[in-house]
Amino acid sequence: MGKTKKVRKQPISAFGPGPDAGPSKSEIASKSAASTALGRLRSGSGNRTVVSRKITQSTITRFHTLLKQQANLKRNLKAGREKDRDTELQGIQRQLDSIEQEMNELGGLNAYQIASTLGQSKERGGDSSKVLVKWLEELGIKREKMAQNQKLRMLEIGALVPDNYASCSKWIDNHPIDLHSQHPDILEQDFLERPLPSGERDTFDVVSCSLVLNFVSSPADRGKMLSLIHQQLRGESPSFLFLVLPLPCLTNSRYLTLDTFQEMMRITGFTLEKEQWKPGGKVGYWLWRKTDSICGDSDQWRKKTVIQDGPKRNNFAVVLS
Ligand SMILES: C[S@@+](CC[C@H](N)C(=O)[O-])C[C@H]1O[C@@H](n2cnc3c(N)ncnc32)[C@H](O)[C@@H]1O
Image (cartoon, rainbow, N blue to C red):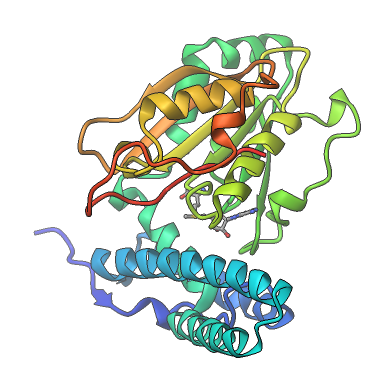
């Protein structure tokens, strides 16, 4: 009879000591504890500690809801300030404080990241890098880089771990960044604030944006993120955006469908190269090739427009500036 492994179930908060939702000094101090917890959870050997799928999923879902509410309230706060409406402002501030408190109680961004890391563990289907690597191989890019003894320059936005592409280090030179770094090899940076490349040498062959666009809470910032990714990509040779989204963002939104998203991407300067998703599936994968952006055609994307309605639809939207 094979050895049985001891499995203990614990809540996410047991691993998420970060006090805030955003990166702060106190969070940086707590990172090593969180990383140790992540290491233990990922090791898959010895006495394994397991957090139930239900708990990780409910932490992620609740965190997304709170982020959306926070973004809306911040917009209302800004509008209220412009109109000098003091009583309204106090009410909004109280709601913002209670959202922040709930985020802290959930364990902040640390707990969210730990839940997401568990979501990408091998036991739960693995991370998205294997889809991208397979596509780059199919496109002959691996063969080309190996033959030229060169590496593909990649920017990975929203990296929970530093080594998603470690097994490809002979031909991929990955630069992982995250709002809240869980490891010294991940640069702590908000992609929306990342300086633009100062020349072609600083640009990337591939930008990976896996389950990040849906984390960005405002439609305008999502549009900005896509446009900034376009500017980070190489222009002189083929370059690609690898995008992963929860499938309902494009199959069940009031504001987008798979077809209209493709049209919006065409205007932003991307043409579809590959896609992988199945009807009713949880996640979709897309590879977009950089093309020229189409100025002048973006008017219909400057605001949200309902294209299909119904009580069960979600509000995922992207707005271009
Ligand atoms: C759901 S996790 C996805 C992680 C991983 N890429 C995956 O596919 O499982 C989203 C990550 O994106 C990061 N993130 C969100 N907005 C970001 C931004 N503007 N710049 C950098 N990282 C960001 C979050 O901190 C979080 O760690």
